[in-house]
Amino acid sequence: MEFKRVAIVTRYGSKLARDIANIVAELLIARNSRVYTIKPLSLYNSIVLDEGDKLMENDIDLIIAIGGDGTTLRAIRWVDGDIPVFSIRIKGSRGVLADVNTDSIHESIEIIYSNKFYIDERMRIYAISDEKSSIAAVNEIMITKSSMNFTPIYEIEIDEHIIRSKMDGLILATATGSSGYSYSFGGPILHEKSNDLIMTPIASLNRLPTIIIPDCSINVRTDSECAIFVDGQHIFNTTKPIIVRRYHKNARFLRIRKRGLTHLEKLGY
Image 1 (cartoon, rainbow, N blue to C red):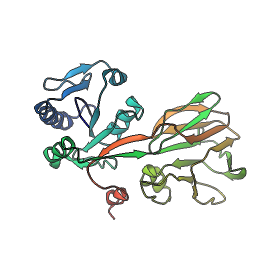
Image 2: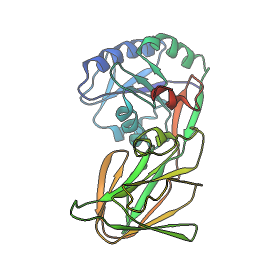
Image 3: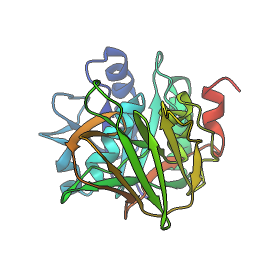
């Protein structure tokens, strides 16, 4: 695989990420690659694009995301899984999605240009409600009550089986996101290659357990307005039924190290 056009995306406002990006840009240009960035970022001999959506118009072969998970997720949303993303974690970031930290930049670029990598595809999910669709989630979709004044009743339909519970909300997490919000509420860790979903209740009054669900559509109804969050971002509020299902495009990561239970390391195990 050739990397003629490589885009670099960094954490907003981070001088450290920018300094690392300049090093990476010099290494790429030395290998005759054309380097692209997104305003306001401008690097050594880079071609600056007005916005992230322009990446798809320039036949980019690879995106290098420098920062934390937020930077990586932003890059994936811009290209909707069509271009692989290689993630570099900077100091001060937990960066569960990252493959390497800044100590191994030169080695990593050498491995990539020697074609000693693999493409790691990860399932994504999205929500639909009242003809509105959310962006695709790499980690999780969280559905919560929009008012703190009362606790709604959730009705969840899975494979024609209906579960009812009075609770503050629920989290539907992928294997990639199993070490995030879902884990914080007591959910399990899944192997990163799993295509199962984790349904983790938030403050269920009847102590609804966490449920592992095979890849399928999940229907959610509530008796009041609820808010939908995708990978930590508020998307919209709705009073209508919600369908959560697998997105038609996976996220694609360029990897140089074996993955599987790497997210356990970030949790200290």
